[in-house]
Image 1: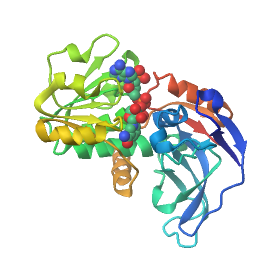
Image 2: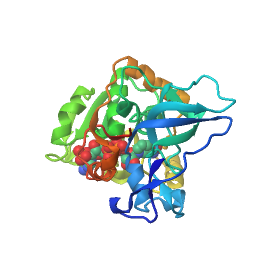
Image 3: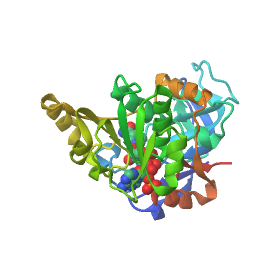
Length: 313
Ligand SMILES: NC(=O)c1ccc[n+]([C@@H]2O[C@H](COP(=O)([O-])OP(=O)(O)OC[C@H]3O[C@@H](n4cnc5c(N)ncnc54)[C@H](OP(=O)(O)O)[C@@H]3O)[C@@H](O)[C@H]2O)c1
């Protein structure tokens, strides 16, 4: 089978299609023939060698976490899944390997694809969808009086977060590009700040919760726009920030809270229910497998709305 791999850290130029044997399954695993995978910033952060503490530096490395496809084989102890089922899921980020024709996965890490969405849309759910649900859990009790600023609102994470917050009735301000502003409104933001025209930090407004999905704000800057008692949610912490934030939170009511998500059935069910209730999944562009390098380049340059996906035939 074909898979995308690399033998050194670097730009998209290091990515190659390699031929390798189709993986074999153990009793609790499932072999999925991949129909689509989606691209996450994590893919290129790992590939550029920015996450070696967690990814290690051994090569070759495979890439890709999110996938959707059709069950091809099931292990002897697997229940609730059968050959031919349309499913989606995510391999553990640091192991990667969903950018391929087949993937082997523990049966507890796949879910039935909702019938009304495409494979590319289903492959767009796990990483950012579970992160959005985790972020909402970290927010605690939110209601129509809770003011939330979502900075970087129209990538994958923001797309799920805005719509889940809308379903919960929070008062959301989104920070997005000019092109993204209409999507942020469509997904439920009460107001939108165009970051190409205005710096949110120079405004007078303060919020109960600030979440930075752009990785460009950070806790120190965010404090200026947080209420005296407020949360800053950080899904891209530097390793040192994780213990530091916990310690500093003991002495401040402006809390710095790290969001680290992984896929779970509980959280994925929240997403599946939200999709049934009308949550929309925007896939900005779907590339054919042969154009995998262009797909990564397109995603890495930013400016897309929702997700970027690759179809595998
Ligand atoms: N901790 C976890 O478990 C977890 C899980 C999933 C994702 N993440 C991380 O969360 C972040 C968001 O994920 P994602 O998939 O949504 O990434 P993404 O698709 O790249 O979205 C980032 C968004 O930030 C916007 N942005 C860029 N510059 C900005 C600025 N100066 N001000 C405001 N917004 C700006 C981008 O808009 P334009 O492209 O229009 O400029 C884009 O919409 C990533 O860093 C990802 O690695 C963490």
